Image (tube, rainbow over all chains, first blue to last red; front, side):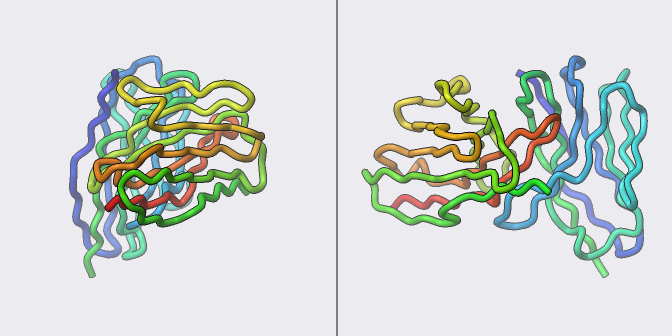
Length: 110
Length: 113
């Protein structure tokens, strides 16, 4: 199986940028995803990037992909308290089966 | 949009009871749906892939006789936890495939007493 790792916890102040990192192992992944999970809820797809891209920007979200190092990051600009949640990266290794990262809990402080 | 619903959102049952969870894609058709299990403060673990009109594909270590999956239509997949026991208590989440994206349901919290 493939391991997708993330740091467990990130704390930022409101208005600052947040950077959540993810390391994956399956070099054949065609798409890589970022999902947001609020307490007791399902997952919300935030954005995704195709494996032949280096960067994708979508409003406050910027995804960077370093395929050589198998490193994916999500930058949230102007982080707000409503961004507090758990963020999961996921890789699509084939057949649309997703392998999820361990999750990063983002805490936004005033 | 792409909305996936789950029912029920929460269920508490006695040990030995069978519990059925429904997953519906409300505004699109999904040939493939997925069932995940999530323990507290942990990531999602894929249990099985549900294919419309055919048998589900189970991940290693998941008992197919315990977790029965039926994908009767392009908008509905059901997961039945047969003879549930306290160790089956968990958060069960489904997702539905739409192109290269997967859209997730809100989850079902199962508590087995």
